[in-house]
Length: 296
Image 1 (tube, rainbow, N blue to C red):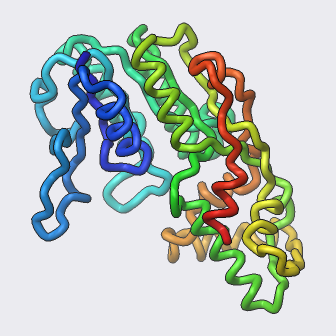
Image 2: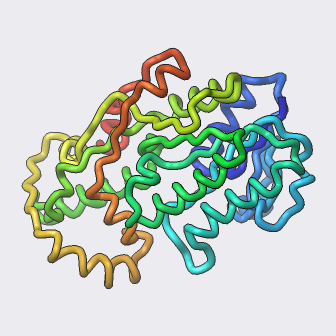
């Protein structure tokens, strides 16, 4: 079996790459990277990684592929890339070049909520990319909730909020509605197990919504970060907060918070965890120990 992972240098893609190479020693597993993250003083490229830009390079370089796993995506737009280019543009490239590499089975790593929130461009373009790939007839769309990886973006933002509360003598201003938002994160090890199961037996379902067992509110996560310290939440009306985020914070400090990310703070990210158990045969792991390790 020949497996190619697009975006194998990212947090999710690299975890899949390492797991599949260890778990399927008889398979030929290749991970691709566009190379920009490897320019570390001439550091040696990890064995099994191929510098390949799916937008510009010849797909014949990948050879015959049985399973193509697409992990390329972005949560924030830059001057050089848009959501449409990275999400929809790549899906169209995959569909166009699929015959060249043997019409592989496609596992598309999307996002939970894709297709449900048309006003959030990140999710809207993810959903459009999913729709394009499903027209191939040989694709499964995996839509995970927030994936628990060390020092992930949400962990960094929660740490920042806790630091702001500590510096404000235990008073933390928050937009109204933010504290009640619930997420249902999943451990990266569980998502790896699902990817492995899908490679070994292509699922009948065309779209798999993937979530862990725990629905957790942002208020609960901030209390975990406080680690017993008293934290007073001061809710600020959203109409007061939103303009400053949209017109000042997002344009000037996109690394802190983009407008899409701000909108997502008020959308529950939960689902039924049965898809995971049906495919893998096991129950997903609780994520509470992860949050305690990362936020304390």
